[in-house]
Image 1: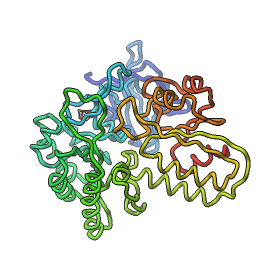
Image 2 (image 1 turned 180 degrees about the vertical axis):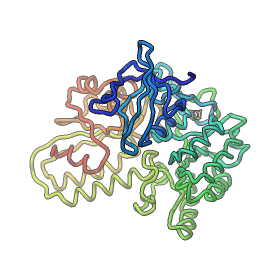
Image 3 (image 1 turned 30 degrees about the horizontal axis):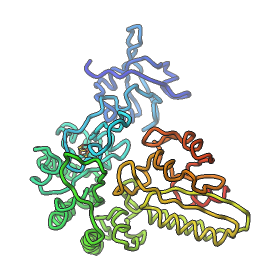
Image 4 (image 1 turned 90 degrees about the vertical axis):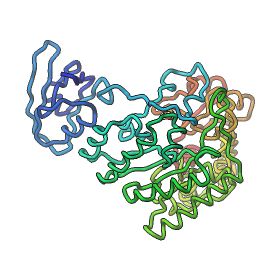
Length: 436
Ligand code: SF4
């Protein structure tokens, strides 16, 4: 068979364990169908009655008849997470962050994925350039949603130029099929100065709005530029004036869309507001925070969560000394929270440090791209109090390792301080400061 999948683990108490499926077994088919990848697996595994063909390491084949609840998990983990090779991208985007990384970082950081299966499993944005019609038909047939799409522009020629892929314009036609199939989508436009802004941005917003309501939201985020751009397309950072113009365009369209459908549809990434030195919009403008993971509304949500939790506090005069490190983008907000907490908790001194991203360059302002070496370099010999708080997005998910492979304990040792990771909500921030 073309597609065979080796079992890595079987969850205790699961259906698979009861059926004596074991690590090392090989899944050959489900309901008589080959299982191409994780899409097929989940689709077939949802059934209440299914037949699974397994080959044991000795070569014996077992046909197992299973009766279970609809969508009840079989409890099998496979050696390959996607049950297939990861698909790398076939573009060479002028704004690609991976092309702007210095040499010598861990290998996995250089992997350019553009795999639709990761869009469903992890929320990644895909360009649709390496998806076949067969992939699109499976998405429609299995009704997999939402899919996150990186548009950049709806001008086919410009898209080919930006993605450096002559099929990138054509790939936009796949959105029509997803729309016809009623698949929910979210979109993103990475804005590059002088390339897809101005009239091109207006055109993209106008064209994309025709895919409403299945296309639920489109975010506009500024291109991330590091200091490692030698030999790459010459892109310039946006200025405050540019940011004001972009916000103007977005707000104008938001008002129109809201009047029409009670959804704002187009959203500005948080960076635009800080760059323009504008107030963040109210939470209602974010339509339920559809693109939070993409840095759209994170600061509004954080502020609202802080305010809510702060309002419940009575305060005390216990002596505490704590430090917090954050990126340039979130600094004014974190500093404001710290000042207000110190007024209510009169014995509490909070040092908030704005870490400049020397590793990637000054234009990178998010805390998620701050490295251990920048923290150590900029916090050495600074007062850090009893503990140093660091936002969880500085770390690889579920691990205590920075992007440059320095670990949390190495940092704590270098700075001679207890270092704690704070979860992302405003309430978590308060609790970490007050140690409650
Ligand atoms: S799709 Fe473009 S931005 Fe994404 S990894 Fe590929 S080249 Fe980089």
